[in-house]
Length: 113
Length: 86
Length: 164
Image 1 (cartoon, rainbow over the protein chains, first blue to last red):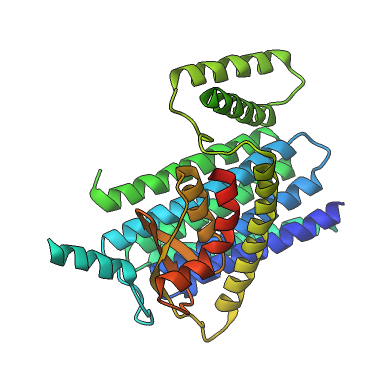
Image 2 (cartoon, rainbow over the protein chains, first blue to last red):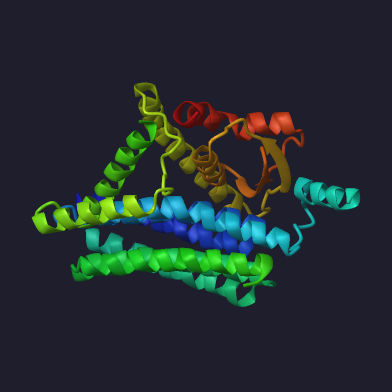
């Protein structure tokens, strides 16, 4: 049982590492956010689940469950708030980008006023 | 065997923190730094839970929970500040 | 009557969290939890997290199905991100597209936005009225209808039944 938990934890830590690697490699802040949010959510989920499986005899499983739920719910919200703020203060998308519908709509509205 | 697996994953998570810290030092603008900091705090939560399991102290899980709360509120506050000032 | 039902649902939900946080073996903790939650419900009349949740058997089944759909999407999005990050050429084709949702309830929209953020290659940037602006890591279409069909519809199907 403990070995199984260890394997799950190891997979989770690999996803955490991939998230950090994505943060270093991606070209602009929105792509970094994509890598950071997704990989760390699943990585933390697996990491904590693995530890809970390894420590199944103690009463801490429910607390770890609450921690996992909290992270799943709040991680996308904080990245959404940050992406919105970044777009609002005008941090540009990378040169590879194809389209930016939000900037188009905003400039259209300003033109109308 | 299980101990080796757990310790290896903790080391990998530490490497991830170092990588994210590189981005947070280098990041060209403030949003990059905040994203990197967010990732660092979430990995730290995992490591706090690992330490709780290592030391067999349930009370450390409360530390992780409060840390998650504070990091979430901190990121939201920084986003608000960037958007329209405090 | 409907409001009363929602209050009971919220009370049960908060009680579940309280019991998970503490434990069931101390009677005074449970009594204190009940008192504090009742006071919370009295003083914060508008604190209705589940004001939109439909309490029917069908919506319960759809909620459970939704959890599995969501977890599958989370795993797929992580594998997707892993392949993109590990590929030395970094195959991305990013952009912000506009999609339309037909959900009416606020909670449903919140959960939809969160789910979009955790599914393959998409990140909600801004919401305005019925429209979401989504950063897509691999833009395949710029048309609103088609993008909505590709990103939103698989979750909307469930959330429509759950939240109406």
